[in-house]
Length: 463
Image (cartoon, rainbow, N blue to C red; front, side, top):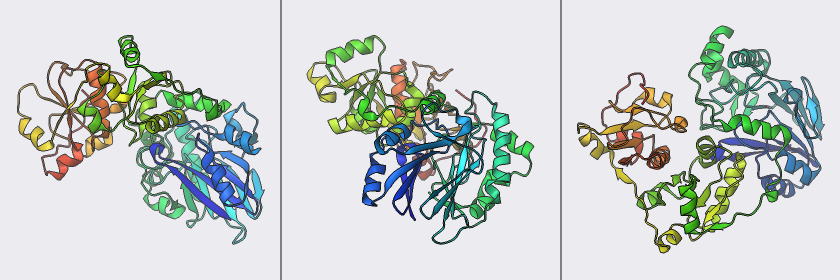
């Protein structure tokens, strides 16, 4: 049996190819499907089956395009009510592919239609070898239970408890666990960075599996959930019908600097995807910086929304194409174009550049007693609770569709996150919203701790 994991770091998404003899199965494919076609060709197998463990909410799946290009069948849980051609899967469904057997377990909880796939490599043993858990069981965590229009979070959390204890944990300790997401995904909150585990390891170390009662499990799973990006429910609906092929998207057109200036005055968004240092040194006034280096697409979807039609600002045509691809992976398809000539083109047209001041943690520490200096922490709640700068205000970047309340836009504000990626995004949004004196803290809270500066741990008070 051939088994391969494909990990997409920018979305913390894992997809899989399994093959036996001449047939291959792809599980939870990403939007751009060329990697699976290349892997199939390299291994001299044909993709004949595509499984979706559920209707993904954090990315747009490539199942429809992959099926069209290979003739493969798509399998998804019966509760998904999918409208594309598919095989509706329920409890105990089995598929034999060469000497490999796939058995479906209905495991509602993350979503009503969630299922896990138990894999047996019959060349070695008829016993289960691995389980592909989708978003039901992660490494160190379980799926969030608030992604349904039909069920409450409490109802889904109860279903999730039953699915885990009555089905997943019935598997032997040595069975390998391969989830659909890793650390950084918003589909959970405490995922570890590893890419594979075992049932036994999760039984002993996963906090959610240590909760003894169903009632307490529901309480913990529905408390302090990270903000759910608005695009999550939209992506689930796109996946219910199946997204069009990426090749069907129209080509991006160059936008002249004068046209961009007019568009910005009308409220359009300019999305600068360059590294934060370059953005700080000079950028189009009012533009939003979400660097390609991090979880670019997730933040763009969460903060701009799928209806945004941004003009992209990049340092090369290759970066424009990469940004376009990543945006499409979360369903943000209607980019208006890209700034012709980039920042240099903007300057050559005679338009001014804005800058963003930056400050070291040592300089920030020495200035904390200054009257009027505000510090804003944009990390998530667990990060804040583990330690923060005394006197800082807290407003996680997830909430930035609304500007932080009770922050004086006329006084200096120093913004930090963990390492600097999110704080640059926040600073650009604050500048766009009219805050007059915004400063980015270089290195973020990691640098603060490395400098052995004082850390507080009181409960958060939002800005």
